[in-house]
Image (cartoon, rainbow, N blue to C red):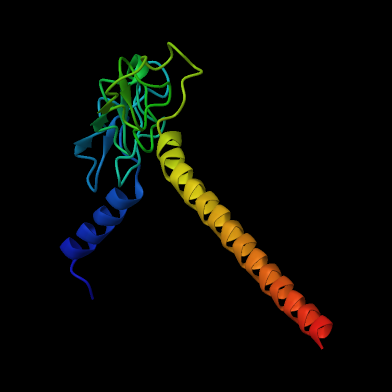
Length: 172
Protein backbone atom coordinates (compact mmCIF):
# COMPACT_ATOMS: atom_id res chain seq x y z
CA UNK A 1 0.00 0.00 0.00
CA UNK A 2 1.06 3.52 -0.64
CA UNK A 3 2.05 5.72 2.21
CA UNK A 4 -0.54 8.47 2.93
CA UNK A 5 2.11 11.22 2.56
CA UNK A 6 3.17 9.91 -0.84
CA UNK A 7 -0.44 9.61 -1.95
CA UNK A 8 -1.09 13.22 -0.86
CA UNK A 9 1.93 14.46 -2.82
CA UNK A 10 0.86 12.57 -5.96
CA UNK A 11 -2.67 13.96 -5.83
CA UNK A 12 -1.40 17.46 -5.14
CA UNK A 13 1.02 17.21 -8.09
CA UNK A 14 -1.76 16.13 -10.45
CA UNK A 15 -3.86 19.07 -9.32
CA UNK A 16 -1.09 21.61 -9.94
CA UNK A 17 -0.27 20.22 -13.37
CA UNK A 18 -3.93 20.15 -14.42
CA UNK A 19 -4.94 23.65 -13.26
CA UNK A 20 -4.77 26.90 -15.13
CA UNK A 21 -2.62 29.71 -13.86
CA UNK A 22 -3.93 33.00 -12.58
CA UNK A 23 -4.22 35.84 -15.11
CA UNK A 24 -0.77 37.06 -16.16
CA UNK A 25 1.10 33.94 -14.90
CA UNK A 26 2.60 30.82 -16.47
CA UNK A 27 5.10 28.06 -15.77
CA UNK A 28 5.07 24.62 -14.12
CA UNK A 29 3.92 26.10 -10.82
CA UNK A 30 2.51 29.36 -12.25
CA UNK A 31 5.48 31.20 -10.77
CA UNK A 32 6.45 33.19 -13.92
CA UNK A 33 4.87 36.43 -15.18
CA UNK A 34 3.65 36.82 -18.75
CA UNK A 35 5.62 39.42 -20.72
CA UNK A 36 4.64 43.03 -20.03
CA UNK A 37 4.71 43.45 -23.84
CA UNK A 38 1.84 40.99 -24.40
CA UNK A 39 -1.31 42.61 -25.77
CA UNK A 40 -4.07 42.58 -23.12
CA UNK A 41 -7.05 40.28 -23.62
CA UNK A 42 -9.59 42.64 -22.10
CA UNK A 43 -8.75 45.84 -20.31
CA UNK A 44 -5.52 45.21 -18.40
CA UNK A 45 -5.64 41.39 -18.31
CA UNK A 46 -2.71 39.73 -20.05
CA UNK A 47 -2.96 36.04 -20.96
CA UNK A 48 -0.18 33.72 -22.08
CA UNK A 49 0.22 29.99 -22.73
CA UNK A 50 0.36 27.96 -19.52
CA UNK A 51 3.66 26.20 -20.35
CA UNK A 52 5.48 28.30 -23.00
CA UNK A 53 4.50 31.84 -21.97
CA UNK A 54 3.51 32.65 -25.58
CA UNK A 55 1.30 35.75 -25.58
CA UNK A 56 -2.29 34.68 -26.35
CA UNK A 57 -3.33 37.97 -27.97
CA UNK A 58 -0.05 38.82 -29.68
CA UNK A 59 2.18 41.77 -28.80
CA UNK A 60 1.66 45.46 -28.20
CA UNK A 61 2.96 47.65 -31.07
CA UNK A 62 6.75 47.81 -31.21
CA UNK A 63 7.39 44.23 -30.02
CA UNK A 64 7.51 40.77 -31.60
CA UNK A 65 8.33 37.12 -30.86
CA UNK A 66 6.37 34.41 -29.04
CA UNK A 67 6.78 36.15 -25.68
CA UNK A 68 7.01 39.64 -27.22
CA UNK A 69 10.55 39.83 -25.93
CA UNK A 70 12.08 41.38 -29.08
CA UNK A 71 11.81 45.06 -30.00
CA UNK A 72 10.94 46.09 -33.56
CA UNK A 73 13.64 48.06 -35.38
CA UNK A 74 13.74 51.75 -34.50
CA UNK A 75 13.75 52.38 -38.27
CA UNK A 76 10.30 50.77 -38.84
CA UNK A 77 7.53 53.23 -39.71
CA UNK A 78 5.50 53.88 -36.54
CA UNK A 79 7.72 51.23 -34.87
CA UNK A 80 5.39 48.51 -36.27
CA UNK A 81 6.65 45.09 -37.37
CA UNK A 82 5.40 41.54 -38.02
CA UNK A 83 4.60 39.68 -34.78
CA UNK A 84 6.26 36.52 -36.13
CA UNK A 85 9.34 37.75 -38.08
CA UNK A 86 10.01 41.30 -36.92
CA UNK A 87 10.00 42.56 -40.54
CA UNK A 88 8.83 46.18 -40.82
CA UNK A 89 5.27 45.96 -42.17
CA UNK A 90 4.62 49.66 -42.87
CA UNK A 91 7.95 50.39 -44.55
CA UNK A 92 11.07 52.15 -43.35
CA UNK A 93 11.78 55.53 -41.78
CA UNK A 94 14.35 57.83 -43.29
CA UNK A 95 16.83 56.64 -45.87
CA UNK A 96 16.75 52.93 -44.94
CA UNK A 97 15.73 49.72 -46.68
CA UNK A 98 15.51 45.96 -46.08
CA UNK A 99 13.20 43.71 -44.08
CA UNK A 100 14.33 45.26 -40.79
CA UNK A 101 15.08 48.73 -42.29
CA UNK A 102 18.66 48.44 -41.05
CA UNK A 103 20.40 48.99 -44.42
CA UNK A 104 21.05 52.66 -45.30
CA UNK A 105 20.39 53.69 -48.88
CA UNK A 106 23.63 55.25 -50.17
CA UNK A 107 22.12 57.66 -52.70
CA UNK A 108 18.86 58.57 -54.33
CA UNK A 109 15.54 59.76 -52.94
CA UNK A 110 14.24 58.60 -49.59
CA UNK A 111 11.72 55.78 -49.69
CA UNK A 112 8.25 57.14 -50.37
CA UNK A 113 9.45 60.44 -51.93
CA UNK A 114 9.67 59.12 -55.48
CA UNK A 115 7.67 55.97 -56.10
CA UNK A 116 8.84 55.76 -59.75
CA UNK A 117 12.53 55.42 -58.89
CA UNK A 118 14.13 52.44 -60.60
CA UNK A 119 15.44 49.53 -58.64
CA UNK A 120 19.24 49.38 -58.47
CA UNK A 121 19.12 45.69 -59.47
CA UNK A 122 18.31 46.55 -63.13
CA UNK A 123 21.69 48.22 -63.75
CA UNK A 124 23.92 45.11 -63.39
CA UNK A 125 21.79 43.18 -65.90
CA UNK A 126 22.21 45.94 -68.49
CA UNK A 127 25.93 46.15 -67.76
CA UNK A 128 26.24 42.46 -68.65
CA UNK A 129 23.85 42.25 -71.61
CA UNK A 130 25.15 45.26 -73.60
CA UNK A 131 28.73 43.95 -74.00
CA UNK A 132 27.47 40.41 -74.76
CA UNK A 133 25.20 41.65 -77.56
CA UNK A 134 27.96 43.90 -78.91
CA UNK A 135 30.35 40.95 -79.16
CA UNK A 136 27.67 38.82 -80.84
CA UNK A 137 27.03 41.52 -83.46
CA UNK A 138 30.77 41.85 -84.18
CA UNK A 139 31.04 38.06 -84.64
CA UNK A 140 28.04 38.00 -87.00
CA UNK A 141 29.42 40.90 -89.11
CA UNK A 142 32.85 39.22 -89.27
CA UNK A 143 31.29 35.94 -90.38
CA UNK A 144 29.29 37.68 -93.13
CA UNK A 145 32.43 39.47 -94.40
CA UNK A 146 34.41 36.20 -94.52
CA UNK A 147 31.58 34.44 -96.36
CA UNK A 148 31.28 37.26 -98.92
CA UNK A 149 35.04 37.21 -99.63
CA UNK A 150 35.06 33.40 -100.00
CA UNK A 151 32.08 33.59 -102.35
CA UNK A 152 33.78 36.25 -104.50
CA UNK A 153 37.01 34.23 -104.55
CA UNK A 154 35.06 31.16 -105.66
CA UNK A 155 33.31 33.18 -108.42
CA UNK A 156 36.68 34.58 -109.53
CA UNK A 157 38.19 31.08 -109.74
CA UNK A 158 35.21 29.81 -111.73
CA UNK A 159 35.34 32.78 -114.07
CA UNK A 160 39.10 32.38 -114.48
CA UNK A 161 38.79 28.64 -115.18
CA UNK A 162 35.83 29.28 -117.47
CA UNK A 163 37.81 31.81 -119.52
CA UNK A 164 40.74 29.39 -119.74
CA UNK A 165 38.43 26.67 -120.96
CA UNK A 166 36.86 29.03 -123.45
CA UNK A 167 40.30 30.30 -124.48
CA UNK A 168 41.64 26.75 -125.06
CA UNK A 169 38.56 25.78 -127.06
CA UNK A 170 39.01 28.76 -129.33
CA UNK A 171 42.72 27.93 -129.72
CA UNK A 172 42.09 24.35 -130.73
